[in-house]
Amino acid sequence: MTGRTRVGSPRLGRRAGDSGTRDAILAAARSRFAEHGYDRATIRSIAADAGVDPALVHHFYGSKERLFAAAMRLPVVPGDVVATALAPGGRDPGTGLGEHMVRTFVGIWDHADLRAPFFGLLRSALTSAQAAEMLSEFVSQTILAPIAAATGAADAEYRAAMVASQVVGLALTRYVLALGPVAAASSDDLSATIGPTLDRYLTAPDLRDRGGSSGIITENPPQS
Amino acid sequence: MTGRTRVGSPRLGRRAGDSGTRDAILAAARSRFAEHGYDRATIRSIAADAGVDPALVHHFYGSKERLFAAAMRLPVVPGDVVATALAPGGRDPGTGLGEHMVRTFVGIWDHADLRAPFFGLLRSALTSAQAAEMLSEFVSQTILAPIAAATGAADAEYRAAMVASQVVGLALTRYVLALGPVAAASSDDLSATIGPTLDRYLTAPDLRDRGGSSGIITENPPQS
Image (tube, rainbow over all chains, first blue to last red):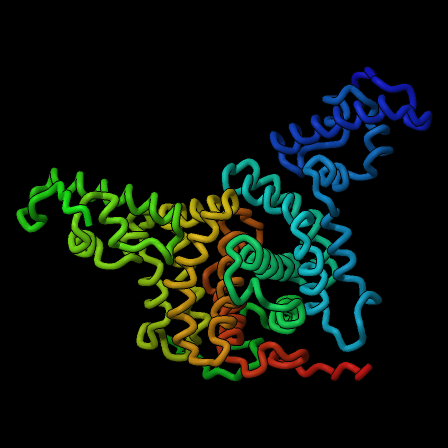
């Protein structure tokens, strides 16, 4: 926006300049995301704050999601993990989607350095309503939206959010609270136990009907 | 332990003295719990730190759980909520245990002042491994143990912990992240959706077997 560009061209490979420019972009991104949230922060505004051309930000980071991941020092891009977890070709025959998702997430989170930045964001969310809103918007756009799109159901957002409720709780009880039996469980056990929950949230036809969709026949409540 | 007692007798109803003694006990409790965890902190040691007789701590607070709840300024005692949630006589005919548990928890958490101290503990747990251990021990002793006892299953601790993984995740996604569809959902929707998950975690015979217990017939994986 300002036309004040600090580097000539990133293609020249001026590494010292690149590094300074990247730092300026990431600092601007952190401020913008924190102040305006994920949805309202734009690459254009971040580029303006950093004094560079928006095309340079696109060139360095490719997308707002990847810029956010870099700014928040996430070692993996959550959307990439979700894409892996949802990939039909990525799972063994006979493995349900829910089971495959649990296995994928646990496989990453079991590495302390891969999960630490995620819990940093969660800690900020517990401290500041603004940080919570930023994280909520990021999770909705980059994690829930692709899961919702994969279900194709009318209430896809509700279903994806229910998946998130179980997956986030697994992360907290296994790694933060480290509740004995959850922390000690194998990936096989967790995916066998929790996978069917996610499958039900994603595909059961009567997810909000009482007495339905559990696979267990229950008596109807009296109409009172 | 020290014999250094700052009040004569609580039965005399000396309110100013009581209040000062209670403050001293709660301050000693907060230090002990933070430093030694929930399991290893004893009423005896807390009384010694506060310079009062252990009997006085019992007289004021009744149990370690209630002392912890008072020290952490929890407006409800979690064990009381769990007892309510598990009470067979407390639910309408036709209401499953899982549904009733979700309804009970959401009914309390929907009051911001009732849930705030809980999230304070969670924030501490995300900040300090020591605080996480204290919270984990408290949750295991006062929330998971009664749930596990209610199942009567061989792997009751695993089942109770799985219930916790879903319930904690519901709290985080509804109230902290406030993910749109979880935050907007009614108690009816949430209990209908999540109740059967908790029922399955508590009662399904084959919780850790692949392809079992989901209530959905799945093809057997090829033996490779």
